[in-house]
Length: 183
Image (cartoon, rainbow, N blue to C red):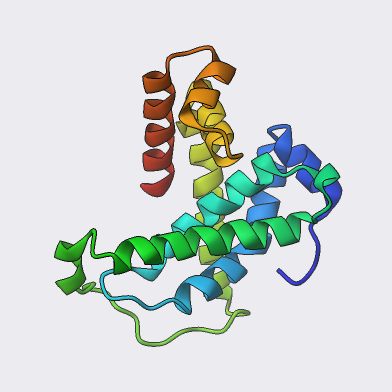
């Protein structure tokens, strides 16, 4: 993520163009994977952190405003790092202590290089699946609630924006997060 994102791609992605969003996600997957791998905490899988980082990136693209003075690269970097740090804090607070003693059955000890074709294909697959779920797996209500939530609105503000009750908005946000996380 050393280069800036194409402003046209960003604008298209914000308007709902799934191909543009896929292109942006593909650019950021290596960065998210590298950040996730650098954070080792018992009971917290790298793949879970990658998903959280990509969800943070999606929300960063959706809530990004170029008139605020920061580039998308800077804003997305902050959103991704903040989300990963939040996951680490949650894990370290022992909120999921039952999972701390488990270990994955398919732990891979070797880490292929960034230019490895297998890794590139995996990044493409992850990006495509996440985008597909975002655009086709979420209802319009869930997608808009998710966007509002990650742009910093409270559940009450989101509900007012959507013209619904607070509980309905909060439930839609949780459903959207669950669907994206389980993708």
